[in-house]
Image (cartoon, rainbow, N blue to C red; front, side, top):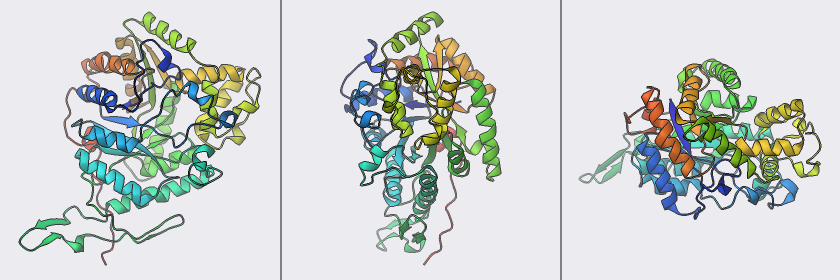
Length: 442
């Protein structure tokens, strides 16, 4: 089993920050993240995962008033955070979210190559396409790119970043004082990329990363996402709410990976997991109830509006959930399912908002450490997942309880490592080092 810790300050439950067990300190204090990172490394987790969005959510009602009910503080820029953590940890992987819609390939290639060098081969890039118009307006645009267009751009972006990482051959550095040659110019190449979205000459201005390529993560569930991820991703982070649905998705996606000419285990499927853990199953159920009681009514609807790029404030929250599936322009695959299930259940928008705020549609495992570990093992054994992105509902205590109590139970069952067997993230995940792409020398 592979495990990533979803690293946040407020916790993943939209009311998690309000619970008495949560600690509401300074969200920009590196010592807070250092504490969690080092605890996760001591538990031998594969990696830390930092999500990101390039705007305060202001889709619901046209402002961010509702959004600040669930996001009580700012979030640090992911690469700055992980660069700091790279010198405060030694073995755990470091995964950061960077958008292909609002960055340039040369910058991203250079940033992740630098992080991979700083960390000794522990970097991972979560390549996302972003979701809403609020982000677009922060980068000089009125509207976010359409679903198909942003995935076409993402495919070219990813290909180009990998090409740039390969513009230096592994043995290009010489550092020969006697001859005065620092590098062998014949082993450094132009990228000379001219595509639909980008024109980049290259080469990158630093050597090939220690892992060859930092590990590529992609998050989503839509058909367009799956087609891109099956050909490119090495880890995917999908939303799966139940074991049955996760099994079906896993089987279908692994078949797509094979159809893309890759080995099935070349991509690790790590769905998000909400663990609500207490000393007994009943205490865990009580804790889940306490968290849900603290949900602000608009928190879930504001989050959903931003993620769908559709303003739910235009509808009566007490009315039945409207069928808006044809109007979703953000995370389409995820919310087609969410909206469809809510309509079938006969929920009001307010009911849907409360449900969504409690789990973000991820699988919620509630129970004692033994019960949660048993359910996680079942997902692994029944081919529903290769592991999980663990999303503690409140922080830091929710994360620490999982690391201190659930991980040892997984180790006792023989489904999770007791020690790291390598020093790079690729070694933790059992992924091969990619061969350099063939770039013609000039």
